[in-house]
Image (cartoon, rainbow, N blue to C red; front, top):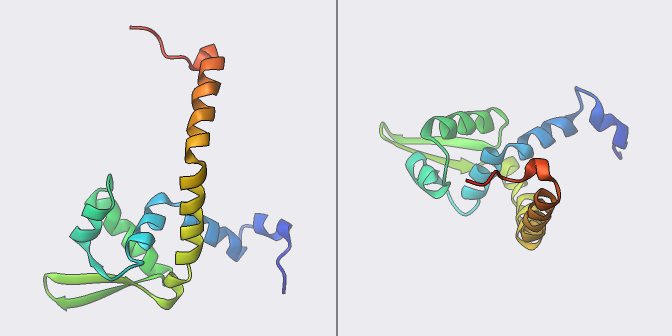
Length: 127
């Protein structure tokens, strides 16, 4: 069965859930961080620059609710997170997006800089 493009606009379409998941930068980074092996919370926080421990915890819980991440408790203070089989299906699409960003990110930065220089409203004030 093929999904029609228009159905993605419906509120209850599963496509919207998938887009919501992959549009969350922290979710994508957590999934990518877990793509090689299970990791502890602190290890993920160190790996993913700029994420607070609170936001990491919220993201991990949300990914657990989606069935993408599993939490393994080995001992009271030893908890690891890993991708489920479903979570691992997102590795390839995330790698494709990462490759696209690496290949085209500079072009976007150049465009933004050129657009800012052409638009006086976007120019930074001197001083």
